Image (cartoon, rainbow, N blue to C red):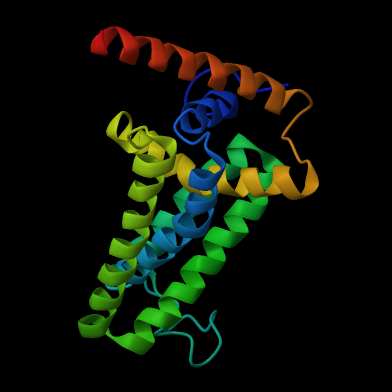
Length: 203
């Protein structure tokens, strides 16, 4: 069964985000661009202050001490990963592993580029990815992004939403029996309500 309403209600989270991403082309665009946005954000987070210094502990292999830095980037990825695991243990665990892999990859990229080049690469990548997503909403979805209505929920759910979409499309995965049917009904109801409001506003 689904979790109760609130912060950890996957059904409501997914329905909220899905109502803004019902067009297949828009969903595909987000599938391509959401995780790169997450990854490049972690590249910049590499240059934040260290939370825990393990350079003298001997825990990390030689040569990794100054690369895998436990800073705000690690904390950022950890929060996302834990949140997804709580939402759904199976898909959430996969999402958490991807978050961890993104953090590791981003730290190596950032350490190699250095700050003066890294922020330029990140800026270019973020502009490209965000532009693609706004085109997806404006041209195909014809609805403003979810972040304009709920910034935190949109940013938190975006990576997990596209992962669940891929798992559902390729493997028919759902967190529990009946999940997608209930979510689909909620999405259709929300979209109908939005269209009705829009029609009344324009009339």
